[in-house]
Image 1 (cartoon, rainbow, N blue to C red):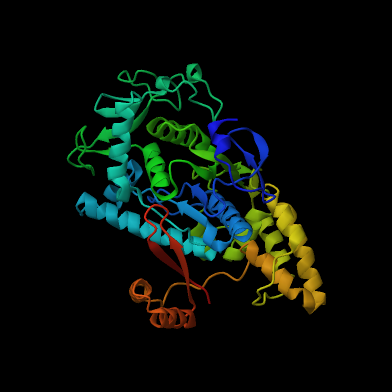
Image 2: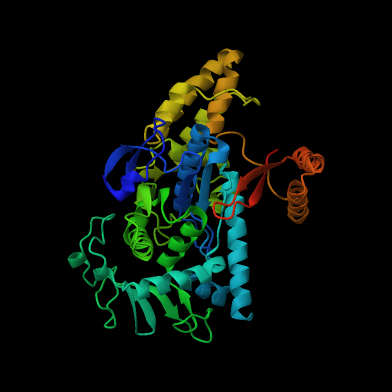
Length: 471
């Protein structure tokens, strides 16, 4: 039994997932049933998220909901990052705000893009993760990990960069099943003479005076993309956690290189026990591309008539995504959206309920997130509930499990600063054990449609509170 296997000390809950690491469907056992940990790569905030970006956000939102249902809301920790340091961001900042100092221009681009991302995914019925770290908040951790890699002989300085030495890791390529001798220079591997091997990748690169940068032992510079997720996942979930998710396009090089960095820095046999990847998305039968004229952002689909000559509700977009199983390729089309809308039009309005979701549907979802089968079963429940109101509670609970409840209200008109201040006051009240005041603040926020969710930092044990608008 491998070291990775010995970490799976939780009990079997009937969950099965296809693990990219082994290419097999496996029984899921958590490291710790009291704290199941999930990490998913989030957006790089240089442009509005496109419909392809929406697929992993929706897929792993369903996984998060399933895990919360099975283990309990307080026993799942979900981290999804935001990459806010990237050369694409720098280029966009220079293009959009040429008259501003670069750091100010970057701040404008990243904040505007992150705000739009949050607005978009709220419309898609997506829950906020427990942690949403930004890369710029973890530069010190990245510098520390790079130092560990150099010290252990897994990284070297050359050509103004710090590079990971892929040859130093004998089993590099285990996720993608690529061998080192296959890492030839070519379309996806830069031809750089300062590299020991064509497959070596950047951990840190020097910045010019005109580029954003941070001080480090190797000079003022900025991190490579891959090191960011290794550090942020460790900070919030630990050196080894349960599930890492993302799109198929991230298997190589991003996830492969995350594994290499994390394992070599920490001396562990694994980074995450289960690796889940959603399939590719095409639009109207073709690869999505601006040159093809079929590139659409989530915002365009929600707020303009650029796709199919009309706007599309968030719940229709979400259902259309879930009608195809997550591992399969999906052809995103007007016809598919119309099919999803037609289904929704036949479903009765949801009711508030504390009922449990349909057990057969939960079992189906637990089998490698068989969302296509679940949607068919949910439709049957909806039709039955329309005939017999006694089935409304189970139908509503099942729809809620899939995130197909009415979408969250628009945040316009909400004073987010005031809400954050109220959350802070409540945390202070909890620290002083002023339960009456804490309950009063929660009730006042609830009357405004604002729901609070309490959790604890996995490292410090500090109480944390997030909030979401439900109207």
